[in-house]
Each structure stands twice: as structure tokens, then as C-alpha cells.
Amino acid sequence: MNAATRRGDEAARAANSHLVHDFGLLIKAATRLEQRIDTALRRECGISHTMLEVLIRLCRKPGEEVSQRRLADDLTLTSSGTTRLIDRMEEAGLVCRVPSPDDRRSVLVEPTDHGRTVFLQAATVHSDVVERYFVAPVGRDDYARLTGALNDINEALRDADD
Image (cartoon, rainbow, N blue to C red; front, top):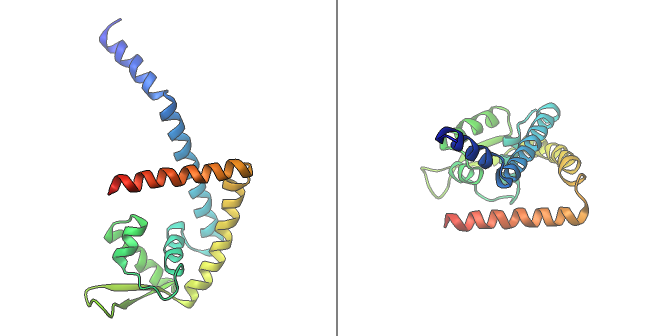
């Protein structure tokens, strides 16, 4: 067996490993679920899933001051990507920018009344899709184990960043 054949066999074993397969299942499921959510939100509410994520963040604690920089960090978006997203949301009447009373260099983002109304509609659409494709296919006990495991993974990744 020559070196090229050996590397081909090793590459095939690596590509077919259970770790590659299992992680691929996670990514495929998450991507497909996100696509279903995004499609439903665009069709029924006129917003993207990312816009919903911004509204979730802004509506979570009424009266909390949230800067664009903090939104970028929370949503793992670039600063310029966040600026463009907030521009589109502001044009749609979902959010407004206000100067920070504590830091003249900082701009805060707040949901508008229209944004809160759209958020409530979108939250229902989001819940319906999540219930149908994330919760219902898994038994109650398995669902609790799944969400517990996802939390453990998230914590391990968060701890690795520190």
C-alpha cells in the first residue's frame, strides 16, 4: 500500500468518525431549525430571526439601557454588522437609537411600541416552530436531558473563554 492510499484510508476513517458524525447532526439540526424559524418569521411577521434575537434582548428587561456594542457582543455580531442590522430595524420602526446619558460616545437601542407589538407576534411564531420541531420530536425525559446537556456544553465553552 502506497503513502497516498494510506492517507486516503486515514482520511476516510477521520471523516467517518462518530465525533464528526454526531457534531454534524447537531449542526444540521440547529441550522435547519434556524431556517424554519427564519422562514416563518419573515412570512408571518416581516422580520428575520436575527431581528427577533435583537428584540428578545431589548425586551428581556424593560428599561435596561442596551448599547449597540453590547448587542454586538450578546449576539456575536461584528460592530458594522450590528450597525447595519439596527439601521434596518430603525427604518422598519422596530427600534430607535437614543444617546446614552452616561457616555456621549455611546448610543443606546430601545424597542419602539411597534417593535414590542411585532416582538409579541414573532415570539408566538417562534414558540410554535420550536415546539413543533425541537420539543415535540423528543420525549419529555429526553428533552430535559437534551437541554441539560446543551447547558453543560455552553458552560464548558463559556469557561474556556475565561
